[in-house]
Length: 564
Image 1 (tube, rainbow, N blue to C red):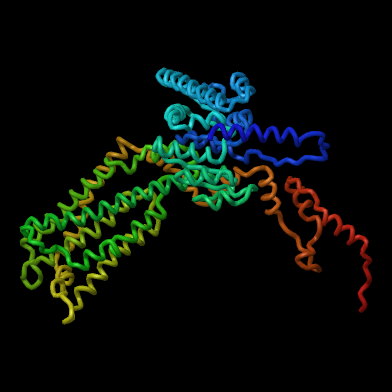
Image 2: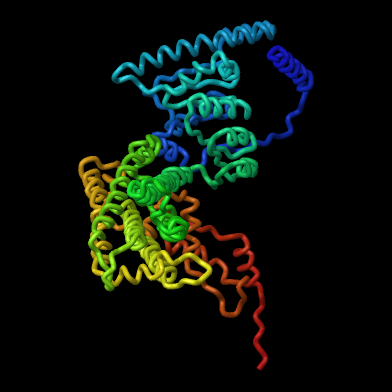
């Protein structure tokens, strides 16, 4: 396939030489292709967040390097590895016109360059004060570097570099490079592009983002997320992406905790029943535990919880590294939740059963199985809902409503469920149980002491962890704990400070007062009002052509006296 490719290229060049002769230049057109506003600062912020950024572009090498310098991906302090096909040796071989010899020579050259750069990179990495590394490779060399025999060296060299720039690459090569990092390095990849030539790259990555711009909507239609400008990637990753990671981690681990606690409580009961299969809880208790009694609070946490505000997330992009290190979903975190589930289940079962041995109701009867199990289940519902509040970084009124509503829903259910019995059901086990329990002092004492004892271990652990081994976001919380939350005005002000000069001018004009003539309709407002008020505000707003024409027509219009 390689010789056929070079033969086709040579034939096309020969045909172009035959056609492009004795032509008269009439005119030319060009498309402005420049970086959007805020791209360099966005890339610099993402780099501080620990995200490795690769540039895959179809531009020539000089343009690609200039873009990398403008985006702070490459600087003069970096050691640059440049693998290019634009060398004198390769040109000399290409001039001979032998496709097989050209392919063999370029492949050998790329192989030697990769080996040499990899050895040099490993040498710099072993030094204490070695410079950061950057790799620049063009599409022709990349074609051979992506072959099975060389892609391992390419991947190792690229992972050792802080920045990678691939220029003159085709859409297929963009997808191949993305798949190489995705499958070879087993890293989470994100691709962002704005044109149809980026579609394959966007689809090859774990997460694809399309920019809705002047190059069509193909990238947007093929992406997972769509943004209007590249600089919005900072908010998408460092703010909303990070919040989503924290919420998902809390939701998953909390589901594991509350179900393990509920199950272990029944497990301890089997030791007293000799593993006979006797159930500890009523069937409806088990069915509605995850559906009603503990469902709403965890949904609220998954929607509204956030550790720091949006402005602080962008001010300290290093907070994003906690997600890269997966600090909140490790086996250690799961083990801590499992330990406290084990501890709390022992408290629920043995505290309630032991304290009920000598308990009696108002009629003098001792408590039975369903009295004890209903008491234990009440403590479980109250405790796991209160435990959720202890892991929330921001508690709103919706958290209070959901937790109080879940506990209230349990009492409403048990009052109705234990107060009604018909001849067609088997509710005789729990009939009137809650009424008997609430008529005793044992119920209120247990409802107060059991959750306190169960949550005491969590409270001590969280306090010691925050005091002696704080996470990065907890340090930021302590630094800014006396500052007001910037949910509305400050955040809007921060967005306003990021506007471009043209956007600031448009926004200032939109805020100017409007004067409407009393004698004309909405479409015939007083001409030139924008320019007048803009000059008063110190904003330059040139007069529009239709305002000038309308003013001239109004001056030439003859005024006739009204007939009385």
